[in-house]
Image 1 (cartoon, rainbow, N blue to C red):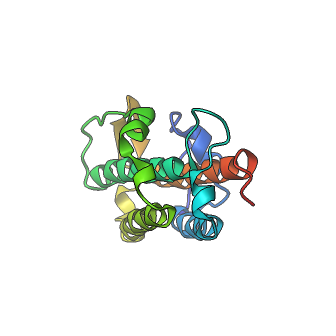
Image 2 (cartoon, rainbow, N blue to C red):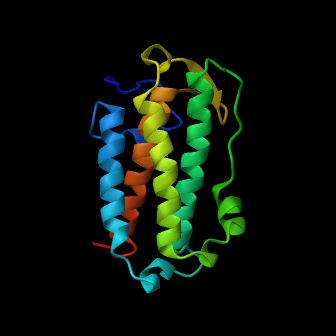
Image 3 (cartoon, one colour):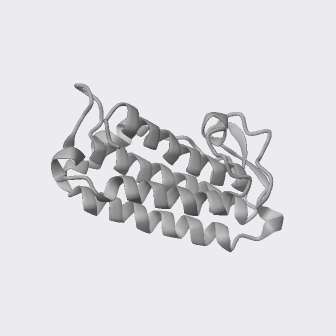
Length: 169
């Protein structure tokens, strides 16, 4: 995948965080960065909240996994030439009912790694002619290519939050 999408306004904030022009390469690099950042955390760090009523790192990682699942579902629908409008979701509702603190941080990271593996495999094997098929998600036009870049940007956004708000180096 060579060109970044230029028309997907709903995901622009995430897409703009991606430095690569190739979404597959960006996904692979982004995966390595996220794994390296989280692999060394203690269980105490996983439970940290930078302020009252903010997500713990566990909840953040579960949120990233949930978002990746939803993005992945949208992506596969588009790659299969399905333009059915797809609904949005409430990330805070998902976090409230995800019960992330029941799991170890490493379990949550492993879950995300499995989900990301499916994402990268799907994108690595996507038919090139379907990457720019346009559908609708959350009331906005979107392509599989845009979703792939948004996935990378979403993780990059949370990496920045981990550095700046949670103090994870």
